[in-house]
Each structure stands twice: as C-alpha cells, then as structure tokens.
Image (tube, rainbow, N blue to C red; front, side, top):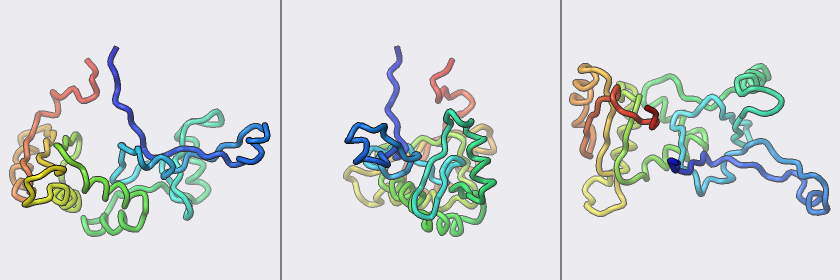
Length: 192
C-alpha cells in the first residue's frame, strides 16, 4: 500500500460552546477557519482558491457537507454577496498588492519565500504578469548564501517547444538553477 504525504491547509474547527460541551452537552463546531492549524500548514494557495472566503474577520473554507455539495455551498455564499479569495487579474504588481491586502494570501506568499530544497512546478507558465512569483523564488534562494536552508533549484513542467523556449528566455531572471521537464510524461499524481 502506498503511503501518502500528510497535507494540511491550515484550516480547522473550534468548539463554539466549550463550557456547555465540558458539562456534557453536544459540542457545536465552527465552520472551517484558516489559522487554527497554521503551524502544520503545508498546502498553500498562492493566488487563493474558490473555496476560501474572507468574512472581514476570519478566513473560512467552504466544503462539502450533509446540507449541500461544495459548488452549491459556494454558490450560496456568492448569492449572499460574499466572494472567494482569488487573484485572477492584473499585472504582477497589482497581483502582489492584492496578495498583501489579504492575511491568508500574504501568509502563503511569505511561506513561499521561505521554502528550501527544490521547487517543482506543474501547470504554471511563468507568464508576463508572474514576476512576483519569480521574485518570491529569488527571495527563497537567499542569493549569495551557500548555506541552507535555501531554495537551490526549480523544475518547470513544459508542454511544448514554445514553452521550453519561453522558460529559456526568462531563465536569467532566476537566481537559482532552472530545469525543464516534459509535463506530458510526468506522472505527478502517481496514477498509471
């Protein structure tokens, strides 16, 4: 049997009625809130995700439950005027400004700048408006330092010769070793 890597997005639940639960009543649990398990977080949505919402006080994660499917629950939030935490437009500076104005996205970005070892990207093209991601990679590289922890290299999945040529063109922007691999042949999900 294949052993999986534990993953956590920093979300968890808290007991909303701790006194009553301690006295034997049924505990009432909060919705999923980000930050409760931030110390063990190892899954980061750098540009947000459809299931994360900023309530103005907390970051909450919508999920499938006995009352509705995930997309139904997200649709109800949208109908109520709530919008997911999601960076979709703008140049790199505008994207970074959006990231910096949300504590969840800012935490993810800062965590990204602290990674070490090697980074493997799959399905990310490093387009013209993604220089903030290259900047974060370069920050993680601790340029000039030869001591770990630091980011040493990036492996970028490509799908075509045009992709390879694009990565070769932007390679000088990176302060680490850059490698490409054929994303079409990579078995990233372990499925055969």
